[in-house]
Length: 416
Image (tube, rainbow, N blue to C red; front, side, top):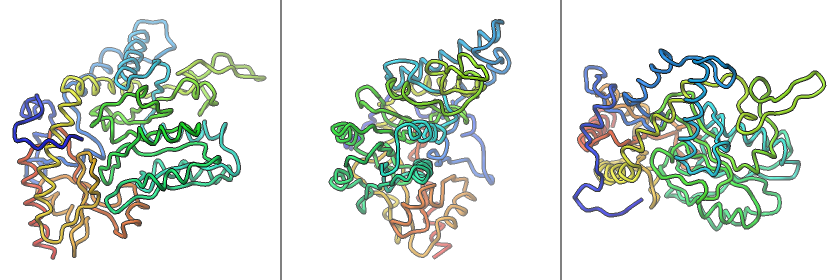
């Protein structure tokens, strides 16, 4: 992220206008105006996405890829246009390298089951990191248990940064895949994924990136990264829940067996043998979440209108504004102080439990996340039960951050 701390705004969008695009931001909670800072869990939806969902069900609702009638063709065209927009958004070489899934978890499980079934055997190993979400731990544990393989973990330092020298030591001839978070959902750390990929590829090891917390903050170019697999969710990208993407290089997707069997993923079926469909349909068995698949691209359209660089700059300003103000609170400690961070602030306060702070903030209309954030091994590493996490988006304001700081001070005064 950029470190320029000049006072002049470095973004070029109207915050008030942006906030008006999100109807839920005008609601109240416990009689207080909603201050929503749980964007790492899910983002709020702009009118454009809400209306696109309504439009699908009122004008296009039909199953895709299977019908010759008008509505089916309309829905199919919209679904495939969305795939095209996703492909352009991440700069995939081919549209068919974009697999529509239910979300990041579904995408990671697809790779663990399909790639793992084909390429991982007894004695092999998979590498993840200490800061992974459970969705990027458990599928690999299941695979290793089934195959007799080993799960290796990249260690971190106290700031929440990967120890790259230690990572290099893990790279040996047993490693079949590396799967790491691009941005930590708990710490906000932006990992050096380009370096990870280059180090892995020198040994011929493919890399998967969990980009669930990256695509809404950072520009993604899968060809420039040369990444082998990349997963993200639509609901964290201002699109609907139940939508997600798996990007995979064509050579890997062609070599992998189907993840699930059923309709759409077949060319021909007989009781003797089934012939599988071409990409991307080989990995899209059954009726998809059609409206979510279509409307994920509406969220992308909204992001593109604002400009990812503008978003990144503004969110970094929010991070720089809030961090020192929170640190002024006696007993407060920020967990995750990497030099390169996204707009996530996790903290603990001596003498309090994160959940108690979260409950008091909720009564003030401030929505934050408390607990281990599906990164329990990471919290165990820090020796804490969890944190209070404020994850910021481009519709948050400095005034809201002032209220967050005041709310935490009030909570601490009540609890300590």
